[in-house]
Image (cartoon, rainbow, N blue to C red; front, top):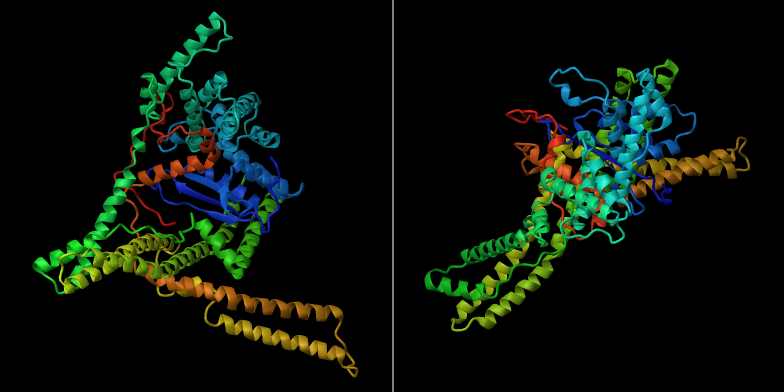
Length: 639
């Protein structure tokens, strides 16, 4: 893999997780925002191995935007940056062995108290190839072999399966000979076999990609290559028949309409791609206009036939308002936190401090494990990093809330800036109503003009208010996630050192350090002084004075205005009720699965061409997991 291009800021790694068990399914789990790839890699390996959490990883690109990144890339970057003798290398190797060891056993037997049959090396190899798209390292395999004496031979199965699975996934994400039908069929059959559920999104996405290509090579209509012999053509047609059976029987949920169309030699568009959104938008515009027109008429002293004539004259010139651009909310909490840190220098310094504390905690754990001679992770090691993780979570959560509030404030400001344009559009509607008001008395024409103006303005403004209301609801959900029980001190907690006294403290620091520097310079210039300051003392004093001045400028020009703007937006947000948890996590979990599939294999969509994809349905019958009866009610946790 080529090295990343140089950037003006360090690469940020954002890792989020969501619960996948039947009790907390769909609720958010732990998350991490850090610049240390070793910490990010350890977080992924330690969190994803738990079995009931699905982890997504993103990293900032050259433009500073978060883009999907595979866990294997994070591990490779971490190993490339760590020195050769760093103890954290041993920690990562042990974490990888722990992650792979968990895939050796069927976790579905644990709730039922079943006795495991034994390690499944094929399962572990498939999981490693789907998640990391590379071969496991020799040192990690050696450590895993030390835990299973006499089991070196199954390691060959693990490595071979990992290689085949990784190659199939990588070929789907990159250029592949689309007309090489034998390779397409072979890779699809590899990915269609049984795989662990936690690595399912990557494998399902790649398998779907292959099915798209195989469907384009329809065995009913396509003809065998001309260079084949008669025996090879018979074998080709038999393989085509087997493939069509797999498409119709083993995976009918992927493209039911398309499969029927191919069978009938007709290509049709799936029914789920019908433009239902356009009809819904037209209905919403109609209701919005009717509400604005009724509200404008209610403010006028009209009744009976006069009201109806005025209403008809105004309604004839009303048109659905055109959506106006408004800044949107960040894509996620990590994006919001990054935007806030780029805007506020003190937030960036706080993030660097928490990263340093978290790195020191992991380094301490790695050194203690090496000095103690303990290869496996003791239970006390995880507790050693809990305070640092708590500090990192609190800092990132506060920055995420402030970043979303700042984006909401920008949207509110943009909506207010659109009002002159709305008045212009309303005045145009009023003139049109006057021009088309034939047969009305002068006072009725005036009323029609007034109603057209008010209804047009109110309908357009209500469209902006709906967008702002959606953003406020999203921000309220973020506040509830990081501050489950907010009180009157929430604004002070969010300000966090940029309160009303911050400017005074910074000004006093500038004055005190400036006087200290002036005193040293005066002492240095005084010919009668017996004790002169050294050049190093003067340099340090000047550096402290300049840093205090920069700190004061940052507070006055950047931090204080941004904080006040965010806190002003907080007032309207906290007037909303906290969003209740969903009744069932299945819908949210399904949405998460779809997004995870798209992010893990983002290159597939660009490579897949115009073929339409639908939401994956249940797994084929030969690889269905054990059915577990979900509880009657879904329990909820607090993030």
